[in-house]
Each structure stands twice: as C-alpha cells, then as structure tokens.
Amino acid sequence: MKNLSLKLAVAAGMLTCTGAIAQDTAVFNRIRRAEMSSSQIPQIAHYITDVAGPRLTASPGYKRAATWAVETMTKWGLVNAKLEPWGDFGKQWDLQDFSIIMKTPYVQPVIAYPNPWSASTDGLQQGQVTLLTPAQAMDTTYIAQHLADFKGKFILVAGGKLNKDANFKAPAARLTDEELAKMKDTYMVTHKEIESYAGFFKIAARVDALIKQSGALGVINGSTSNNNGAVFVQDLGGQKIGAPATAPKISMAYEDGQKIKRLIQAGQPVELAINIKAKSSTDDIKGYNVVAEIPGTDPKLKSQLVMLGGHLDSWTAATGATDNGAGCIVMLEAVRLLDSLGLKPKRTIRIALWDGEEQGVYGSYNYAKNHFMGVDYKLKPEQAKVSAYFNLDNGTGKIRGIFTQGNTAIKPIFEKWFAPFNDLGAKTVTLSNTGSTDHLSFDWAGIPGFQFIQDPIDYETKTHHSNQDNYDHLQIEDLKQAAIIIASFVYQTSIEKDMLPRKPLVKEIFAFDGL
Image (cartoon, rainbow, N blue to C red; front, side):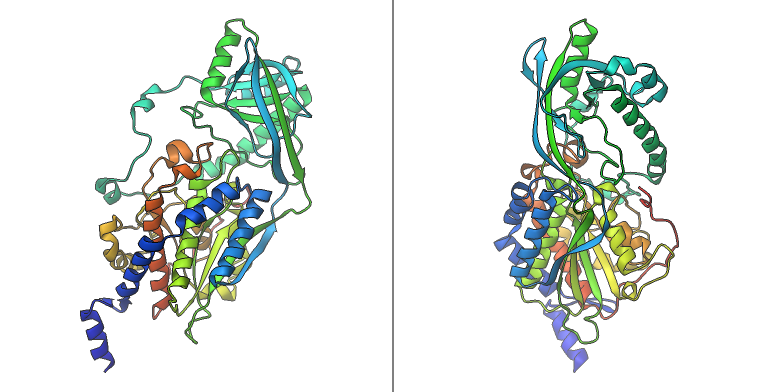
C-alpha cells in the first residue's frame, strides 16, 4: 500500500522522486503562490532599513533591527526567538551629529561621511587642507618627517587618475548562461588578501599614531573608488578595546577630493569646516546574533536542525539594504512563509541573523565555536545534528544557483531541487567555492554550508559598503524569487529521510581568524 500511495502521489504531481529522495513539489507550489500573492518583503525591508537605520555592530541601529526581528518572529509564531550573545566585540559607536562644507576659496557643500569609530572633532573645526598621495599616506618615514606640516590642518589623501572607461559600462548586470556555466571560485576577499591584512594593520596603526601626534584636525580619504555618486565608507579595527584614539576620519567623494586637490596645486588655499559628534562606549562590549525556530514535528528527527541566515550588521553611510539587509529580509520572509502556511517540518528549522560579519565574520564564526567545534577541532554534540545551513549575502539579485563548496554528493540532489524553479532562472549547481561570508563558519566546522549564486545587479559597482546602499536599490521581485527558493530548499531539507551528505572535515584555521 505504501508503494501504491507513493506512485499515486507522483502521478498527481505531489512528489517528485529523485532516487531515494522524494521532492514535495506540491508544497513548493504552495510556497510560490503564497509569496507572489501576499509577500511581506516590502514591509520587512522597510523596517530593516528605513526604520532601523544603519546597523553597525553594537550600535543602537543594530539593536533596533535585532529587537524588531525577535519581536516580529515571535508574533508570527516562531519559538525561542532571542538575542544570543556570541562573545566580546568591542566598542559601541553611534553618530550623533555631522556636517562638512568647503569655506574657502568659496562656500560649497561637499559629499563626505565620517568613518565608523571615528573620533569626534570637539565641535566645529575649520582648517586648511593639505595633500597626501595614497603612497605617502602609508609611508611612515615620510609622515614622520612632515609632522609639522599637518598641525591644525585637515589631511586629504587624494586618489589618482580615474579610469573613465568604466563610465561606458553598465553599472548593473545579470549573469548570462555562459557565465553561469563557467562559474569558478568567487571570493569578495581572497585568502591571500586576508593574510596581508596583518601587515597592513600594523602600518595603518603606526600612521594613525603619527598623525594624531602631529595635531592634525582629521584625515579625509578621497579614494578613486568613491566616484559617480558612490562613496564607500568602512573601517577595520576601530572597535577593538584598547585601540588608541586616532584623528577624526572621513571618506569623501572622489570628485570633491579632486577639485580640492586641483585648487591647492594651483596655489589656492582650501579650508573646510567639519563637525563630527559621535558617542563611543564600552558599556556593553558583547555582540549578539538573532535566532528563532520553527519546531520540528517528527519525534525522531526534531532534535536535528536545518539552518538559514544572513548577516544583519551593516556599515554606516547608508541603511545596509543590499549588504546584507536583502539576505535577512529574504530569510525572515522564508520562515514567515513556512510558518504561515502551517507546514510541518520534521526537523527543527532555525534562522540566524548574524552580527559582526563586516569586521571578520565574527557572529557566525563564534556561533560555530560555541555550538559546533572549538579551535582545538573537538566536535560538540550539536555539530552532528545540523543537516545544512543556507546563506544569502551577495546583494539584491535573484538566485541563479548555488555553490556546493566542493560537496560532490550534494550536486545531483540540488539539481533536482532546482528543477521546479528553472523557469525563475535558477538552475546552476557548481562544485566551486565562494567565500567572505557566513556559510564559511559552517563549512569550517564540518557542516554542509551553502551560499546561493545571485545576479550581481549593481552590488559590487555601486551599493556594497557605500552611501547608495538604501531601500531604493533593492530589487523587490528578485527578493520574492529568492524567498520562494530558500523556503522550499529549507523545507525539503527538513523532511528528508536522511541528513544531507557531508564532506570530510578538514582541520584548518578559519579564514578570518585573528582579524
């Protein structure tokens, strides 16, 4: 009778057999219809971005978004929703006031933003601007020899010549079939670059100390990348307890920086008036992830987990819509869909919105150490109970496939699961790796961790870490497509007879450890 029932179900289109795996396409279709008819993505996006504001780790904006997520998931019916501390993060920082304007040779606004963890200016400060090239700005010998030149002045590190050929390329794009077929390892930051950070940090710390010693009013970075309206604003290491105070730091639009540079080189003194007021505190140095669950219903399998997530923290020049509000919005919508449809997962589904990703994948890595495996590589009991982790963190584009991180056994399974969504543009399953985000923490701990392939849109060219990373750059229809696919993958994983296949555990130092 069981075999007959299964055959009838397959014939009716309710289940698709994939070897030993039964795929519940009927539920996939319910999820799809529900999302397209009553999506909550615009409302979730509004609260995560517009209402919460910038979500720098440990800032009031992060706490607003995290608290809202906990309260909202509780209202939806999820259980165990909470802020879970993952360990020590460092200083809290919150911008309270900021202004900048060019005062001479004429009055004109300029586009610029204070860097996170910047020192305050002790009120409005007006001073002349002096120039450094990018090479000089990292030359401690040169700076030490010119300390007297910086006293009472703003230092502008002006970028070099702009590559104007880039202006003739579309700023946004979708992946072609050819690009998807040839998908290779893709890293926002390579392992070699990560390894070089230690040396860079030492030089930067020495530079900061010298400039602070000089009595400069502040340092302004007019990087070549800050062009065409996008200003990229970030900082590394400023949150650390014991890190010495530096001069105020600002990121400026390339075009404004070049105008100031030309004026100074032509013999025209330039003065800026700048006010930065920021609150820095060590009242609470902890970092917090957001977690919640949909309980499993199978007596034997409910102790096992299927996890999904994205990072909730962002930088400060915008509201972190595509990095990574988009991933969190989709994951929240996915669990809302699963709960609202009254589906009964066999395994427990746990969502996690990560903290501290931007500073070195802190939230998920420490979560993995707390729950799954220590740095001594000793496994904890919960490690064996996680079937898979699904991550979304490459902007606002629709899902086009998935990176399997070299997990050959999972490739045919995911290809079958994608089949009902081929018409939505999602079908690529590559054995290639991708890095620089939270699925790596699970991969490091020997748990199947996967990042979806997304259309790039204008993520790397315009919004990633920039002042343009706002709600209006979200592709809402793309996010709906992503929510449908992720909710379906998570549900299917939760009802599988067996946990998803794992790769052998490789004992290696975590890519971002030590940052």
